[in-house]
Structure formats: C-alpha cells, structure tokens
Image (tube, rainbow, N blue to C red):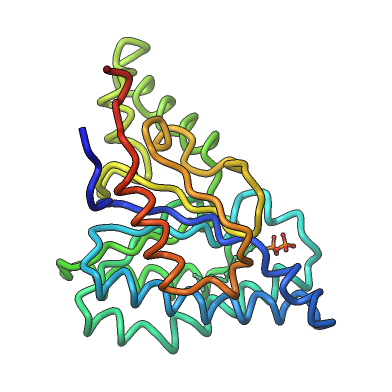
Amino acid sequence: MSAAVPRHIAIIMDGNGRWAKKRFLPRVAGHKAGVDTVRTIARAARDMGLEAMTLYAFSSENWKRPEEEVGALMGLMKQFITSDLDEFVANNVQLHILGDLSQFAPDIRDMVADAVARTAANTGTKLAVALGYGAQDEIVRAARALAAAGGADAITPEAMERELYTAPLPPLDLIIRTSGEQRLSNFLLWQAAYAEFWFTDVLWPDFTAAHLMDAIAAFARRERRYGGL
Ligand code: FPP
C-alpha cells in the first residue's frame, strides 16, 4: 500500500537547549525561539490542510527540570495562548490537549480549558498539544478505566484506542524528532505501532516548514505494510 499524504503527524520538538547553548544564551531563550517554530509549523499544518498534528510540549518527566526552567516554560505557554488563540479560532483550528494537567497551576489549566472550548466547534486541522504527557501513564490509565468498567476482558485494542488521549484524532502516520536524537522518550508508544519515523539533526528552533515538507515527502516514498506482505 502506498502511503501518500499523512493524516496525523506528531513531533518531538527537541534541541531548544542546544540551540541556545550554541549562541551563549540561557536555555529559556531556546524555548522562546522554539515557540516561534511552534507557531510557524502550526500555521504550515493548517495551510496544507493536515488533518492532525500533535506536538510534545511538556512531558510528565519534564517536571524534573530546574524550577526556573519549568516556570519559564509555563510562562511561555500562557503567553502563546494569549497571543495566538484568536488566530486558531479564526482559522478553524481545533485544539486538543493530551496528558495529565493535574499538576499544572490553576491559571494555566483554566486558560487551556478555555482555549479548547473556544475551538471545539472548529472543523479544520486538529492541533494536539501533549502537556504533562507520558505514554506509559496514558496506557495504564486507559487499561485501568476499562478494567474498572468491565473487567480484564474489556481490555481490547479497539477499546484501548477509545480510552487513549488520542481518541479524537486520526491514526498516527508519522513521527518527527528533531536534534539528532533517535528515541521515543515515552511519547505515543501505543499510537506509534505502525507509524513511520523521520529524524533530522536540525534543532527545533531552526526547523522550518520546508523541513516539514521534506518529512512529508519522505513519508510518501515509504511503503507501509502493517505487518502484511
Ligand atoms: C526540548 O528541548 C524541548 C522541550 C522540553 C520543550 C518544548 C517546548 C516548546 C517548544 C515551547 C512550548 C510549546 C508550546 C506549544 C507553546 P530541550 O530543552 O530538551 O533541548 P536540549 O535537548 O537541546 O537540551
């Protein structure tokens, strides 16, 4: 089966810290530049009519980073919602959050909930932001919910799909990771079962719409067999 156009692309946005270090800047400057790339890539996804894009913005493990860096990331996310939400609303982008927000401060939780609500009726590109996300937690949470409702037999692949944070999104086709690392880092482990991977040495703040197009072109050349011949 030839792959053609991906429906759902997920990105591990890595390399902000190294981008800043190369410029003798604080790590936070790298994250700030990373937010500009988020904006560019979200616009590119929308402009090309991509069905869904998932961005790994803050993992459940990122809480272990220094308090100052975590605080700066939270500030950047709030700023981003404030500055960009109207554009998402106006451009038919539907926002989704994947992850456990219980450890986030109430003001961010409120802002995020408001952003999701304001875009809920949109019908264009689904932009999912993974926040407080860990795939192993996601899978355990889904399995527990099914077991609690219907016992062990209720746990089937199809039922799991319906319980995962990604239930409203199309199947994952392509995972991109920037900055030269080649691992999943607890991201979309279940959903990656048949996804293609595309790695680049480009650091996230340097990633452009042209790189996204390169990844999509590489995807189109892959032959996906889903375990068949
Ligand atoms: C990885 O770079 C990046 C992160 C842990 C955070 C990604 C977050 C953003 C790009 C901004 C916030 C997102 C939104 C949606 C507004 P790193 O710090 O691990 O880089 P390094 O590996 O070079 O140190």
